[in-house]
Length: 437
Ligand SMILES: O=C(O)[C@H]1O[C@H](OP(=O)(O)OP(=O)(O)OC[C@H]2O[C@@H](n3ccc(=O)[nH]c3=O)[C@H](O)[C@@H]2O)[C@H](O)[C@@H](O)[C@@H]1O
Image (tube, rainbow, N blue to C red; front, side, top):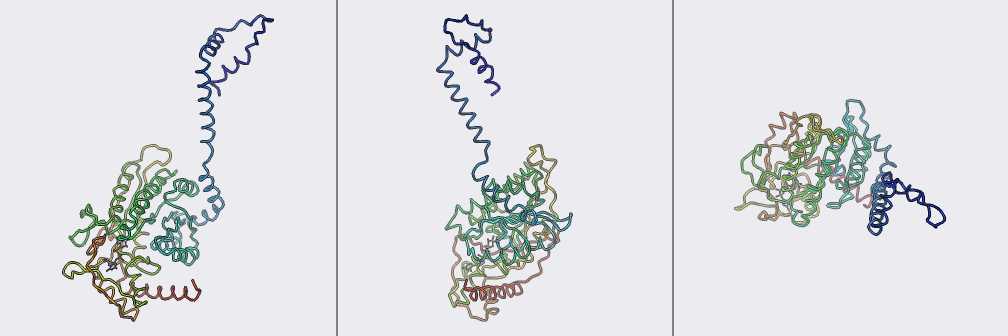
C-alpha cells in the first residue's frame, strides 16, 4: 500500500474543475502523475487490476490452508498427549519419532524405547497392505499399554510432519514406515515408490528442516544384495543388482540417504534387516502364512532353486533386531545441519549402513520342519521352482560391523524364536475367536 499512497493522495486532492474555481497550481510531481493517469488510463486500469489481484492473492496465501488448519486442530487437540508421550523419563533420554509404529518392528521398537525411559511418538497410516485389525491390536495391546501415543497420519503428508517437528523437538527418527514384501511389487509397484522413495524423502526433508535436525536411523533391507553369491553378505559387497522393485527402492533409499547426509549434514544410519520374524509379525511373510495354512490343513508351496537347490534365509528374531535398532540410536552422532536456519552444516555428519542379521541361514525346508514340530501338524507340501518375481535364493549376513559399531550380538536361534511366535499365534488367534473378531 505504501507505494500507492502518493497516487491516492493526489487523486483525493484534485479539485473538481467546475469552471467556478481557479485550479490550484499543481506541483511538478502532481502534473507528472496526473498526466500519466490521463494519457495511459486503460493501461493503468490494467495495472490496478493486477495490483489488487496480487494483494488478494497474498492475503489468501498468508492464510493457513485447509489441510494445515485441520492438522493444527488435530495435533493441538492431542498436543498434551503427544508431548507426554515424547517426554523421556530423565534428561538423558532420547526423544524419538517412530514412523511405522503399528508395524511389526515399529511396535516392538517403540515399546522397547519407551520401557527403557525414552520419549516416543509413533506415526502410522494403518495402511491395508495386511490385516489392519492386527495393526490395531498392536496399538491397543502393546503401544497403549506402554504409553506410546501414535499419530494417525502419512509420511507423505509434509504439513503434518512439519507440525509434528514443530510440536516436539525430536532427537532421533526411527524410520520404519515402508511398503514391505518382495513379491507384492508385482501387484502394486507404485506403492513402493510412494512409501519407500517419496515418503522417505519427505521424512528426510522434515528432519533437515527441523529447528534442530535429529539423527535418522532407518530400515533398509538384506534384499539390496540381490543375487550376491559371496557369503556372508558384507556391507562392502556390491548392491547394484536388485531383483525386486522392493530391493530397488531400498537401494535407492540408501543413495538418497547419502545425498541428504552429504548436503544437509543429517546423521543417517541405514540398517539392513534380514528376514525379521517373531510374535506380532507380518501375515504376508512365509513363516506366518505357513503356520496359518498348516493349521488349516492347506497346501503350502516350498520354493526350490534349479535342480532342487535349497532356498535359505538368515531369519532374524525380532528382539535381536530391536536391540540393534536401539544401539543404532544410542551410537548415532548428532546431525551437523542447521535446520530451518538454512545456514551451512557444521561439518561432515555420520553415515552408516549396517547389516542386522542372525548370521546362520536356515533352509525353507527346515523352517517348515520346525513349524510342523511346534504345531504338531504335518504340512501338506508342494515343491515349486522359485518364481522369478523378487525372491533371492539365499541370504547370509556378515555382522562384524554391527558387532563393532553397535555391540550387536544376535541371541535367538530359529527354533527358539519360532516357538515364541507359535505360542503368540495360538494365543492371539484363539483370543480373537473367543471375542468373535
Ligand atoms: O530381509 C529382507 O530383506 C526381507 O525379508 C522378507 O522377505 P523374504 O526373506 O523373502 O521373506 P518371506 O517372504 O517370508 O520368505 C521367506 C522364505 O520363504 C520362501 N517362500 C516364500 C513364499 C512361499 O510361498 N514359499 C516359499 O518357499 C521365500 O523364497 C524365502 O526364502 C520381508 O518380506 C521383506 O520385507 C524384507 O525386507
